[in-house]
Amino acid sequence: MLRAKAGSVAHGLGASQAVILGTSPQTSFDPILVVNADWGRASIPINNPLSSGVGVASQAFDLINYNAYANVSYTQGFHTGTSVSIAFDNLRSSTNSPATIFNPAVQSTFAVTIQQPLLNGFGILANTRYIIEAKTL
Image (cartoon, rainbow, N blue to C red):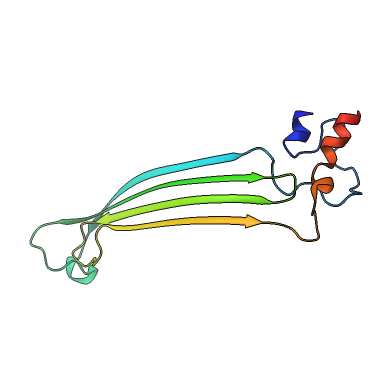
């Protein structure tokens, strides 16, 4: 019953059962929260500073790059077939290269997506089919 309420095929029904009342639910009815974060540092030795674009240096020069990102997304499907997705992505990069104009560079993206099928999988009956079948078993 819990699997059916989450939007999946109930365990006793089998995943290969023919669909009669439309398609199976497109998204999970349970909310899904995903958080990703990463940080990285790269030190790249420069053999020839003149040809690499960092200028003439009298000493050995290492190009150092820093990258960090933190992304958060939330997705949920509803019994009507509607699915909502909200995502917030952040990226920050910096370097010690003198050729870089924007340092540090920060890029953030916020997106909200709402999807409602008009024909395939539309309506409460098509999306709650497995819940109804699990209740009758």
